[in-house]
Length: 148
Image (spheres, rainbow, N blue to C red):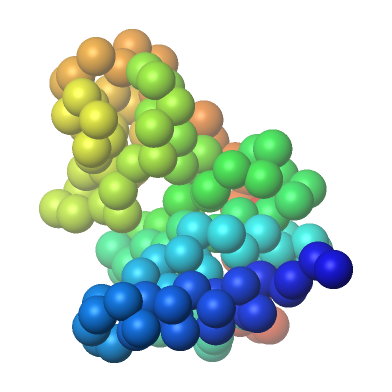
């Protein structure tokens, strides 16, 4: 019998509670696991109303789509009221997932390569190539963003 992801998560939380791991930690770990494993099989379209992080310039999220970037994470950044940019969220040095942007930079936690949010180019570090840009088209009338 194959268990669903939700059943596996419940089993993990129940086992963790029995072994003395705090419930707050289990909830945090569960959230992290859930976020990491979620791959959207639908159209790569984001309803911006569903993402408070993207309501303001500088806000960013990561998403995975089965149809884009080999299901690897995509970093989506709101640059201004009407401009968005999307990049592969994998560092071009060793393929490690980069962090969400901060202060106009995207940082790889592995070797510290830093990239510009504006165009994905390398600021410094072991990475030589810029982050792979993925097309993002904003429809202001519908408040949606099409990726890819």
